[in-house]
Length: 468
View 1 (tube, rainbow, N blue to C red):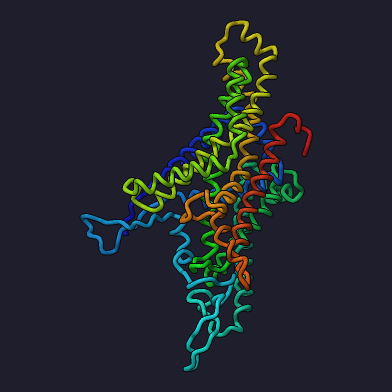
View 2: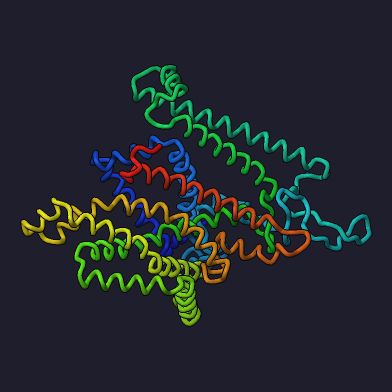
C-alpha cells in the first residue's frame, strides 16, 4: 500500500533543530576549548545515565515525527485517494498496540472490563465483568492469568539480559580492537573502573532499559500493560505518543526564547542608557502580567482562527499541530525574561573588563565586540538555562492542558491524560492507571533532564569546577 508523506510545521522545526544540533556537535568536536566541558560532562556517571534515558525518549519522539497518510483500499491506482488519518512511523512500529481497542476502562494487565454489564452465560443473563476482546484473550482459564504474566515477565527478563550481554560483548570487542589491546584486558579495565568514561554506569543503565523494554514487549503482546482509558484505547500507547508533545514543548519553545533573551539581555547590559531602560521596562511589564492569561488569550485566538478557516487545514492533525506551535510561540514569548535578566547582569560585568575596554578604545565595531568577546563568555549561562528550563516547560504543558488552555484535546499529551483522569478519580472504584501512567513517564523524562542538567551545570559553570 502506498503512502503520502506528511510534513507538519512542528515536524519541520524538529528536524531543523536536529540539523542545527548536528552542526553544533560537528563544530564542538573540531575545537578543543569547546570540547573540554563536554568531556567533563561525559565523565559524570549520573549525567551519562540520564543522557541515555533521554536518548530513548528522543528516539521515540523522532519516530513519531515522521508522518504519512495511507492510501485508501478502494482508491484507483491512477488517482489515489488517501486517508484523512495522519499516522507516524512509531504507529507502524506499535502495530496492534494502536489498533486493539476495548469497549471502555480495563485495569492494568486485566482480563475483564472494569465495569459490570449484562452478559449471557450458560443460557442465562447475569451481571458480571465481561472478558476483554484483546487483553488476555489467549487464556481460557482465569486461573492461568497470574502464571502467564509471571512467565512473560521471566521471558522478557531473559531476552533483555541476553540482548544486553550480546551488545555489550560486541561493543567491548570493538573498543578493545580500537585500543589495540586484548578483550580480556579491556574487560579488566572496565571492571576496575579505569576507563576514562563511566562505562559501568552506562552498561547498568542500558541493561535496565533493555530488560524493561523486553518485559513491556512481552506483556503488551497479550495484555494492556497500563490498562485502557474511557474509550478503550491502550494507555501505554497513549503515554508513548505523548512523549513527542512533551519534547516539542520543551525544545521548540526554546527556539522562541533564545533570540529574545540573548539579543535583548546582552543589548541591555552592553549599551546601557536608554536601550537598557526600554528593555528593562518591557520585561518588567511582561512579568507583571500573569503568564497563564497571556497563554490562554493566545490559544483562544488561534482556536477562533482555526474554526473560522477550516479550509486551511486538511486533517485534524494539522489543526492540532498549529495549536501546538502557537502554544510553543506564546510560551517562548512569556518565558524569556528570566534569562534576559541573567545575561544583562553578566554583560554589565564583562563590558568593564580590560580586553573589552581595549577593543572599544581601538575602535572595534560593537557587533564584533558582542560576537567575539561578550557572547562566547555568556554562552555557558545560555546552555545551562536551556537544559534547566526544559523540565519546567514539560511540566508547564501538563498544567496548561489540565486547565484547558494547553494543546488540542485530540492530541496525545500527558496533560490531556491527567485532565481526562481528573473526574475518574472521584468514582468508586477509582480509575487510577491513566494518571499513574502519565505521572510515571513525565517523572522519568523530567528526572533524566534534571540529572543531565546538573552535570552540564557543574561542567560549564566556573564556580562549580571543583564539585563532583
